[in-house]
Length: 125
Image 1 (cartoon, rainbow, N blue to C red):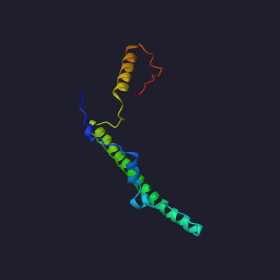
Image 2 (cartoon, rainbow, N blue to C red):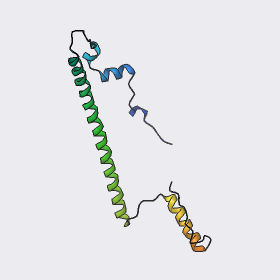
Image 3 (tube, helix red, strand yellow):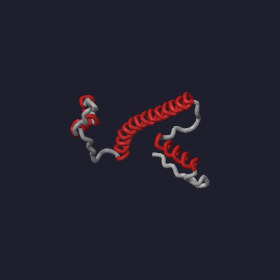
Image 4 (cartoon, rainbow, N blue to C red):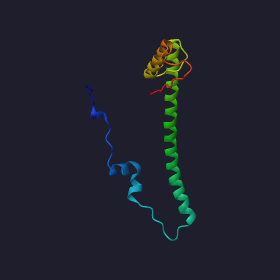
């Protein structure tokens, strides 16, 4: 029977907590007020700066995730390569079910049950 430790699972924050996480104190307390005397370019520049900073932050996080995925891919390739070298074979790792089907087909061919000119379709699961 499997034992689970539910205390280690992080709790998803509530909607109010998400707002607190995303917005700083000043952003929550003072809304952006646009007065008639403000120049249009000044307002656009302010919003470009705010959104640009957030975009850079999110881009860096995305790059970090992409780099981690690439590292995991490289580690997997290394493990597969080491496995192949330890087994002394250079063939790809095939699931056991597919190997069993291929072995059965080979045995039937050698026994003369299957015509050797026909190809067998082997599904990999």
